[in-house]
Length: 205
Image 1 (cartoon, helix red, strand yellow):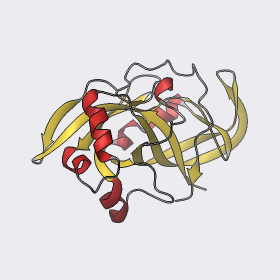
Image 2 (tube, one colour):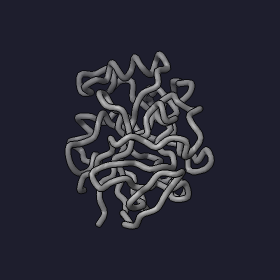
Image 3 (tube, one colour):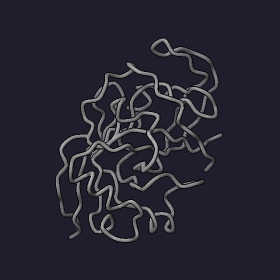
């Protein structure tokens, strides 16, 4: 059964301003995925480097939102009107399944009253702060125990269908800034160096 899978990352490197169709955006690199084990309510699951790489281009045009929806997809008109703040472009594999995108953050939306926490996110982007993010995607879970970098997992995730990238306002992601993920966090750690903490959750679509 396909499920919505949530795993965290971070925002990565120098930001810049760019206009697209007459709108102003702050563009910041975001490291969204690294190979490793993410623990959640289905137990520790492996996101492999080859699988991450296979779906690199699928992250283009995925919406950026403030926090995850309580259930289901973020790609609805009502949710995006309330918490959509931009989109991802120029997705790339940095090597070994470390996936990075350019996050296009809509300045007008971040300044408006429509985006809760928007002004705080805008200030962080302008300062070049490292910000926590989390990916929401559908995927198939294949049960079966194994080990990765010395750590046990009970299943592996394949067949990613990206849904959204959430900027987290109160939580640290399963693949957080300290793990080499997030906004303005391009350097990061090498793949497999650290097992991610058990903060990932999953929701049905």
